[in-house]
Image: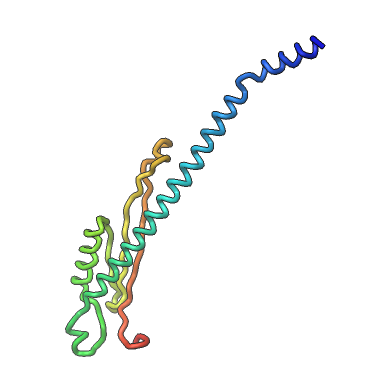
Length: 148
């Protein structure tokens, strides 16, 4: 009986500290997974905001139509300088940077927003920020129920 007890005691002493090492490894892995989830969700939110800002800037640019074309009934076209200025002004108010382009026919406005997302957990792994971009476009339409 004493031999069996001595055998069990010696085996338990061999395992001392094994659970602490396992717990440390699992805790580090769990913190890494939580960090990836938090920073991944943060980047998605930043991308959604960039898309929303780009779409709103394109809509703001779409309000700057060429009055000479619209009044004479020759069609609905954007004034290139005024549209670009309206989009850049919206981007500046939103605190972002981006580019504005206008199609050759003057009816399609496209805005691209670029920025960065400052990471919370991944900065411990050396990744302090991630790039974010958003795209938005607006098409000028003319008509009551459908474009003419």
